[in-house]
Structures are given as structure tokens and as C-alpha cells.
Length: 395
Ligand code: GLA
Image (cartoon, rainbow, N blue to C red; front, side, top):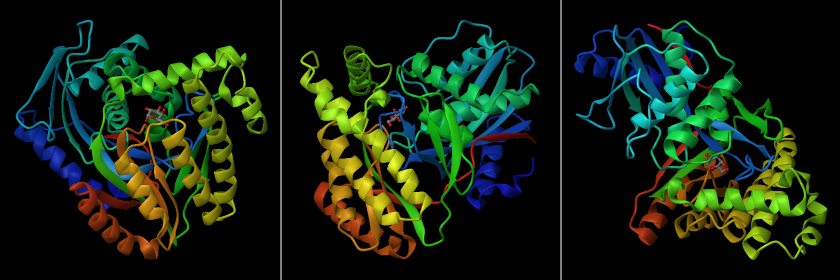
């Protein structure tokens, strides 16, 4: 594959990752790979409830250079952890250690071995521009890019959806986050200029164009983060699944939005479960409506649905935080903004605004100024177009 189709930011990053590889004493890379972060436009916390989700790959990337070794050793370096070398043998039964970023790589190797691939030792260097803890799936990008570069290194291929599932399992088993499939599917399956419509009832997917030159996606990273693995995520996921069992449905997708209040009268549901079910059922409906609105280029209608999603995540699902509430409310009140909401797992991370591109500059300065005044933190704000997904190629 040629690198010409990569965004220009990436060309420079690939040179840097090649330099880091050489400086680490690894010689010349055999394979390069890149994986984007992702942002979810709408459809939050419903990938594990049989819902439809609508993510896009963003212009932030994990870049990797890799070379096979003759023994079974893996040696990893990252520009984000200067001076540290993560080292282990592929022959061992791998297990996660502490919070090391190498755990994600171990998880992917374990998955590839379980799928019957012979994984050799290798050396790899990583440079990432996907902010960690920003709710933009830096870990899914790391998993996906290692899946692809290892497969390319050994001259093997794997179905993209299967690879996404393998990476999801790595996240479950090696990072302790019982996530749905959205993040790994998005970073692998997304296409340039398009949103991914992933239907989590059967993992079928389609691509919907998002290429209006007048409208963009603005990502506002609050720069506060609360770990997803601290239990808040798992509690909600388990609560939704327990509620589905009580209500006698396979997933919450089966509940008709028009009937939700009636269904919630079931005495066996706890108060928390009622709020989770209300969020999931209404969010599934909002996502379907957003797909329709965007198809008609009715951005203001889509934006209203984004705003309603934020309220539901804040009040019913309770995964927002004061910083994300502040950003969303401020953005929503501005000219040229169709809608704004927290995005991703929550508990910090980023908000996404659907915004007219001629308003991006003024909106960015306003949020920077007001957010800093309110919280004493500099947010990180950038516009993105939907990008292509993970790829790897021989050097
Ligand atoms: C995290 C998980 C995803 C999804 C989102 C919430 O990003 O990894 O599977 O559940 O939270 O929509």
C-alpha cells in the first residue's frame, strides 16, 4: 500500500516512528501501521444493549513500526513512555501486569494465538496522537494497530469484524473493561468521509456519508478523566442486562420507545435500573432518528437529538460530569452549533459538537476562555472530518 492516502499529519508521524525505532536500536522496520481514534456522534452506552451506534474515525492516530525477531521476545517502546522498554516472551501464557500499556499488546497476541496464528517475537515502536483518557478510544486504536501490523508481519489476514471482536476481548481480559464492540469496530471499519452505522443486534454495519463541506465535527476534550475500569461502566452494563432479564427481553432494543414508561412500572426494577432502561431505550430511538436527519442533511434536527442525548446521559445514565455539562451547555447556546453532547463512556473525556465550519474558530476561542475561567483547565479542541480505519503495510 502507498502512504499517499494518509493525512499529511501522518506522513510526518511515520517518519518520527521510524526514527524512534532506529534510535531504540531496532534497525529498520519491516511493517508500518496506523489506527485512528474514534468519536461517537450518537448512540451512547447502547452497544451492549443491542442498539445502533454512529461513530467516526478521527484525525488522531496511533502509529507503529515493527520488525520480526528470530527469538520469542517482544520489545516495545513508546514516545509516550520515554526510556521504558516493555519486554516479554510470546511463548509465555501472557497475563496483564499493572496498568502497563503493554497489556493491550499482550491481549492482542493472546487473541491471535487463540485464533491459530503463530506469533513470532518482534520489536515495535509507537507514537500516538490519540489523547489517553480523552474518551476517544486510544486503547482500541492501540489494539487494532497491533492486530494489523502483526498479521501483516506474518503475511496473514483476518476478517475485519473478527479482528474487532478479538480486540474487544483483549480489552475485556487485559484491561478489565467489559466494553461493547463500538470502539474496536469503529477504529477498524470506518471509512473516510463516512460515519459507521453499527447495528449491535447482529453486528451488521453500513457506512453513511458525512461530507458536507459546510458542517464539521468539533471535539472538545475536557482534559479530565475518570477511569472506566473503576466500576462505573460495569455497574451500568450489568444493570441494563439485569433489567432486560427482569423484563423478559433479550436486549433493551426490544422495548418500544412508546411503551417505555409503562414498562418501567415493573415493580422488580430498582430505581437505578429504571433510569438505565429509560436512557437506553430513548437513546436507541434517538440514534435511528439522527441517521435519518443526517441523511436528509437536516443538521439542526440531528443537533437537537444530540442535545437530548446529553440530558439523558447526565440525568438518567449519570455518566457526565460538571466539566462536560458546562462545555455542552455553552456550545449549545452558540450560533452555528446544531448540537453538542458528551461522547464515549463518560466520567470525563470529550464532548462532540455538530457545528457549521465557519463557526469553528469563534466557538473554539469562546470555550477555551470560559472553560479555563470556570475550571482552571485548558481544554484541547480540534475539528475532525471522518477518517479511514486501521491499516498496515510492508515498508
Ligand atoms: C466505551 C466502551 C464502548 C461504549 C461506550 C459508550 O467507549 O468501550 O463499548 O459502550 O463506552 O457508548
